[in-house]
Image (cartoon, rainbow, N blue to C red):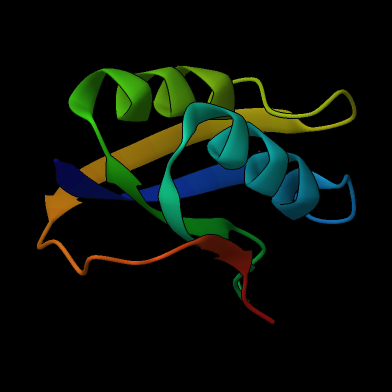
Length: 89
């Protein structure tokens, strides 16, 4: 188990990125959060098995249909033992 911080840069707000991330994370059995940042990026913290986290990171590089992702930055952070994945506003 590990937790990663993911910052997604590009046209990622107003394109259902958070809702799509929530759906993908739940499909992968991950816990954590996703939220929009004031600078236009999407911030994700996801926790789970390494292989499933990698699948989420790969998905983040394209995102939902109308997103235009420029960069995805990831960093491993300390576990928080989240119980679910949710959108934070």
